[in-house]
Image (tube, rainbow, N blue to C red; front, side, top):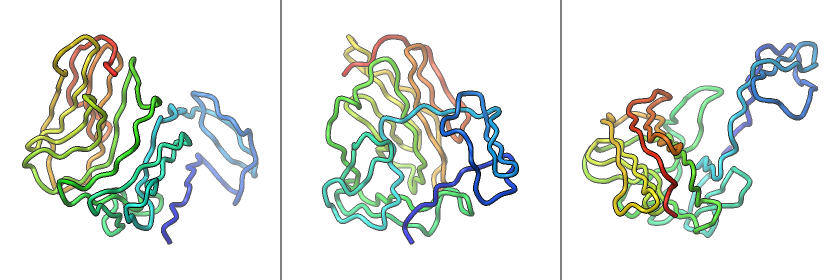
Length: 212
């Protein structure tokens, strides 16, 4: 079964199903008692522009086979023989993560057609689960033009180009191979920051709009 279950974590749930409001406001958390939902203390996350679970049963290079879960229709295509697997997920158990993409060669990746929705200027966040098997060379995680998150000789590296600049701004942090890590690059028009497993590991001041 290659379908990923949609898991909702409840503070308390003494029924198989829970009726409640369809919308949840920031700062609230759902609680289900007697089949009726009440709302307290949930953090509502921003909606991503693009979100790829890599949970398809397999890839064969068909156009649009790598589905965008954001609802924006920015589906991608696996190239170079990239494939999916489920033998060693990032978070085992139930709930946990499920399938993942395997990129074993330098020409294996997922390509997404250019779209204006991907051209942010004021802020940017790239995030991914990765399992690097080597600390040598350049290993791209994701990028568009001069906005990039990648590994360079074992260093997690974030790079953005500020409007009007001729060279990109780069920050880096050592990352151990042969294990799963959740990594993120965040630019908010004031700072450029790398996160590993939810913790800020390096940041630097930087202002200006992103070049498109």
